[in-house]
Amino acid sequence: MVSYKTLGLVNTRDMFARAINGGYAIPAFNFNNMEQLQAIIKASSELKSPVILQVSKGARNYANQTLLRYMAEGAVQYAKELGCNHPEIALHLDHGDSFELCKSCVDMGFSSVMIDGSSLPYDENVALTKKVVDYAHQYDVTVEGELGVLAGVEDEVVAEESHYTKPEEVIDFTSKTGVDSLAISIGTSHGAYKFKPEQCTRDPKTGRLVPPPLAFDVLDEIMKKLPGFPIVLHGSSSVPQEYVDMINKYGGKLPDAVGIPEEQLRKAAKSAVCKINIDSDSRLAFTAAVRKVFVEKPAEFDPRKYCGPARDLMEEMYKHKIIDVLGSDNKLAQ
Ligand SMILES: [Zn+2]
Image 1: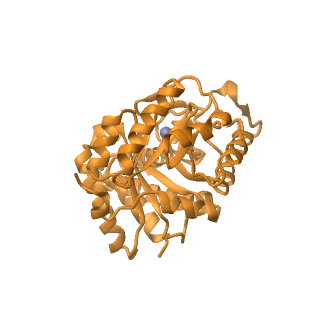
Image 2: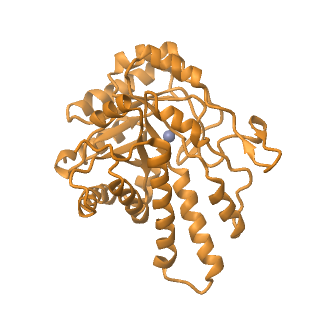
Image 3: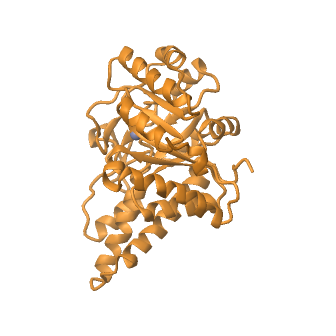
């Protein structure tokens, strides 16, 4: 048993409370490798933003869970080296799908876990979530639950159809389970293809898809039922068209990739939405930068010469999100 507190990590309780009151949201960035982690820590430390490092089941399989945990511990020290004397870094399990997985993360030093029972019948979701909360809270680890289903593909999480969170369920769910935050479905979606062309309109000038707006009426109803309760948005990459264009220009093929417009995320961040998950945008930035080097310098074979530019582009993207979308810059407690 390793407590996250000895690793210098924090849980999400305090950062969420401040984010709700302050009208901003905490970035939750997924990481799978060193360059991503460096870019996240550099961006969040230089901008004095709290940050949530997210590890999905796929990341655990790819990078090894023990290594990921030590990387997060290293990240705390790296943030201090960068001049951030009191970094607020949470290590969070994204889309935990079983009690055993959540328990293993709590036991190895995660400060926060998500138990995603959203695909289960309601009563089973309640029972599973409560079981995880009862275990995690013994160690002061915060828990995120989910109601409603997001469409899209994220590692091993696949859903064909989405359905919005039912506002009439949220009070019962949060009081029965004791969760610290609730992921809801209001039209965001996992992956780089968040919407099918038939769900969108097309901008006549650019030919680009324009996605349907988020269901802010559903969010409003949920906030009325749960005043001051931390709400989480998954699947909130905006799929920047500059990266999609770069990928396509340098030999890639991502037709009609489309995300959530940043103005809508900014609007959500000002409400009780206090955690916004962004994963695909960093994948796109990474891929765009690597493809560019491969095309422009075909003789290059030192991975540092293409992972380095990828890291730089991700850092720029993270900084933009923190300042212009989430508003979490200069929000460290001390
Ligand atoms: Zn998700």
